[in-house]
Image (cartoon, rainbow, N blue to C red; front, side, top):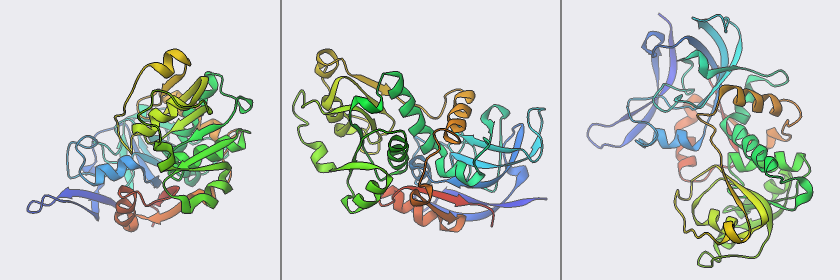
Length: 332
């Protein structure tokens, strides 16, 4: 019977704390699904850190294996859509939430969660992008749909040193946008500049003016990864007709709000979902990221780790210490 390694999160019966350890599991312990995938690479996202810490808003049932991203090869398929050896990506839906995720060397999932690895990128590249790259691409797509182009003015990126922030800066800069980066890690200013940011703004500065109904018009567009009052300050600082793509809540899901920016400046607040959107949209975004939107400098953004190193990096992410992206190599 085939066994495999997986990160196993469970609650200690005495202390009630959630622990993470690498264990041996059996393939027949995986849930039902049409496609069995051998995972080569996964990636660490904030939602994974929440799941690994026992957040019941992310994962309801424990013990559990997190990992909302996975890239690998099809081993078995109950449908004609997939054949053994096909290289595929699985991201979002219920993967890593209440379905065993990419922090295991095998996953079994519904066929309609799976899409093909685009030509031009490797399985490693796919997870260097992962949900973060998908989110960055979706955010820019929505901004462009609202008319935010390189000649419109500066685009502001919050949570700039994180995965979505880093990839957003690199993507925007590649496409000719002028990018301002907001971060609580000013020691990473050189890193952000290398990615393409032309202005670095301290997070504390971005909080200024929270109690004011409007702020000076500054940004043509923005990608916000943190939520909270920084998001509302961004909204209050958009130029007339400007737009912000909102995709995160690391700071807070709540903020002070008034209608003035919306009715006096006609600004647009755009919601970004990378989990439940149609599979063909995910495929389109990854295909674009493999071609004309291929993000440069991935080697500067990505840090590769093993499954055994995951608990340490989960703790670092949960405490806001990580920079860029973390790819998990499950091939050893």
